[in-house]
Image 1 (tube, rainbow, N blue to C red):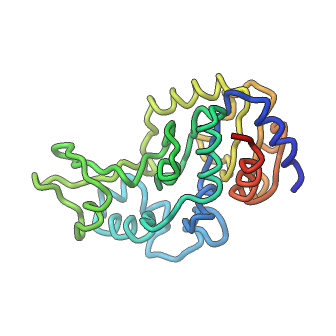
Image 2: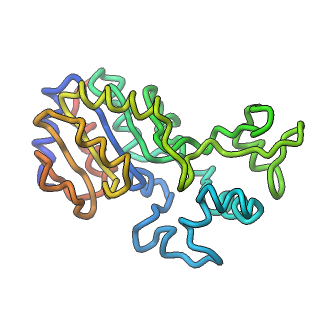
Length: 243
């Protein structure tokens, strides 16, 4: 695959790599993305998926929100793929300093990555809106209908819905990592969703790598563009990096 050798060389030369990824990182684990032909946006429901995972819909129609959320947003059986495992290896080698992800599935942590910034939250964290009690994903999934806490409050997933803002602390931390990076690898994201896509503007180095199956609006700004499945690309690269 074109560009693989260049990517390997840059990784060997770099000591402060940051990875920024989106839904495409998890599709190889069987989790559909939102915008591909087989993604959630192309499936049929009573309401458009982007409406059903909006803050206003959550407040207006919680029963339908939780039904859709549990059926279509949670993939408890998904396992880390080659991309997740490769990034964990690069972190263990001291090369990769942080993973910044738009995904809410927790697969980077399941693979062993330690410094993971979740821009859109995580399905594994759920909190009572009344008393703020933590609720695990397993406990959350066992609750029927609109999930209620023992105190009577509604349990809300710690995920960023449409119409909700990103956590500013997480954004600031991501910006700090990217500004320090001597190499920024971006993969599995269309780079059209803001403000997350704007993080690319914080990188000022000369090793900006984009790995995607399809073109993005930012391809012209990259120092290296690799077209392919990110698990295949990062997996083959990580195998060539010595312990």
